[in-house]
Image (cartoon, rainbow, N blue to C red; front, side):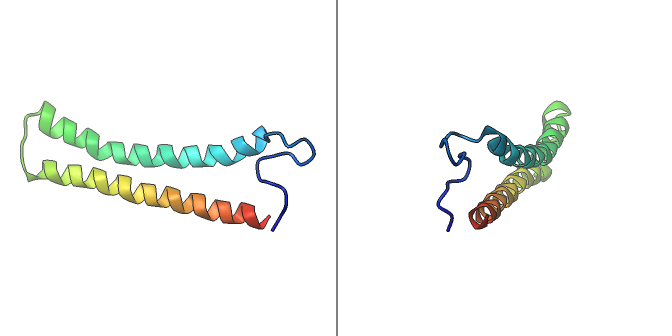
Length: 91
Protein backbone atom coordinates (compact mmCIF):
# COMPACT_ATOMS: atom_id res chain seq x y z
CA UNK A 1 0.00 0.00 0.00
CA UNK A 2 1.25 3.47 -0.82
CA UNK A 3 2.46 5.66 2.02
CA UNK A 4 1.25 8.91 0.46
CA UNK A 5 -2.36 9.92 0.89
CA UNK A 6 -4.64 10.59 -2.09
CA UNK A 7 -5.53 14.23 -2.76
CA UNK A 8 -2.42 15.51 -1.00
CA UNK A 9 0.78 16.69 -2.64
CA UNK A 10 3.71 14.62 -1.44
CA UNK A 11 6.35 17.08 -0.24
CA UNK A 12 4.15 19.86 1.17
CA UNK A 13 1.19 17.77 2.42
CA UNK A 14 -1.24 20.33 0.99
CA UNK A 15 -4.52 19.54 -0.70
CA UNK A 16 -4.19 18.80 -4.39
CA UNK A 17 -7.16 20.83 -5.64
CA UNK A 18 -6.65 19.80 -9.26
CA UNK A 19 -6.98 16.13 -8.33
CA UNK A 20 -10.03 16.87 -6.17
CA UNK A 21 -11.75 18.66 -9.06
CA UNK A 22 -10.72 15.87 -11.42
CA UNK A 23 -12.49 13.34 -9.18
CA UNK A 24 -15.46 15.53 -8.20
CA UNK A 25 -16.64 16.56 -11.67
CA UNK A 26 -17.56 13.07 -12.98
CA UNK A 27 -19.31 12.34 -9.68
CA UNK A 28 -21.26 15.59 -9.90
CA UNK A 29 -22.27 14.79 -13.48
CA UNK A 30 -23.51 11.38 -12.35
CA UNK A 31 -25.55 12.90 -9.51
CA UNK A 32 -27.10 15.47 -11.89
CA UNK A 33 -27.94 12.74 -14.42
CA UNK A 34 -29.75 10.70 -11.77
CA UNK A 35 -31.58 13.81 -10.59
CA UNK A 36 -32.73 14.67 -14.11
CA UNK A 37 -33.98 11.14 -14.74
CA UNK A 38 -35.82 11.17 -11.39
CA UNK A 39 -37.36 14.55 -12.20
CA UNK A 40 -39.17 13.19 -15.28
CA UNK A 41 -41.76 11.10 -13.35
CA UNK A 42 -42.21 13.97 -10.88
CA UNK A 43 -42.91 16.35 -13.76
CA UNK A 44 -45.34 13.91 -15.37
CA UNK A 45 -47.12 13.33 -12.07
CA UNK A 46 -47.45 17.05 -11.44
CA UNK A 47 -48.64 17.78 -14.96
CA UNK A 48 -51.14 14.97 -15.29
CA UNK A 49 -52.63 14.81 -11.84
CA UNK A 50 -52.35 18.17 -10.14
CA UNK A 51 -52.62 20.62 -13.04
CA UNK A 52 -55.07 18.68 -15.21
CA UNK A 53 -57.01 17.33 -12.24
CA UNK A 54 -56.74 13.68 -13.17
CA UNK A 55 -56.72 11.21 -10.29
CA UNK A 56 -56.01 7.55 -10.68
CA UNK A 57 -53.81 4.68 -9.72
CA UNK A 58 -51.14 6.04 -12.08
CA UNK A 59 -50.33 8.76 -9.55
CA UNK A 60 -49.10 6.08 -7.18
CA UNK A 61 -47.21 4.45 -10.05
CA UNK A 62 -45.36 7.67 -10.87
CA UNK A 63 -44.50 8.19 -7.20
CA UNK A 64 -43.17 4.63 -7.01
CA UNK A 65 -41.22 5.11 -10.24
CA UNK A 66 -39.57 8.26 -8.87
CA UNK A 67 -38.53 6.45 -5.70
CA UNK A 68 -37.21 3.51 -7.71
CA UNK A 69 -35.10 5.76 -9.94
CA UNK A 70 -33.67 7.54 -6.90
CA UNK A 71 -32.88 4.27 -5.11
CA UNK A 72 -31.20 2.66 -8.13
CA UNK A 73 -29.38 5.89 -8.96
CA UNK A 74 -28.07 6.14 -5.41
CA UNK A 75 -26.81 2.57 -5.66
CA UNK A 76 -25.04 3.33 -8.93
CA UNK A 77 -23.42 6.42 -7.44
CA UNK A 78 -22.23 4.46 -4.41
CA UNK A 79 -20.82 1.73 -6.65
CA UNK A 80 -18.97 4.36 -8.67
CA UNK A 81 -17.48 5.80 -5.50
CA UNK A 82 -16.35 2.39 -4.23
CA UNK A 83 -14.82 1.34 -7.55
CA UNK A 84 -13.03 4.67 -7.95
CA UNK A 85 -11.72 4.48 -4.38
CA UNK A 86 -10.32 1.01 -5.07
CA UNK A 87 -8.65 2.31 -8.24
CA UNK A 88 -7.08 5.20 -6.32
CA UNK A 89 -5.88 2.84 -3.61
CA UNK A 90 -4.14 0.66 -6.21
CA UNK A 91 -2.30 3.59 -7.78
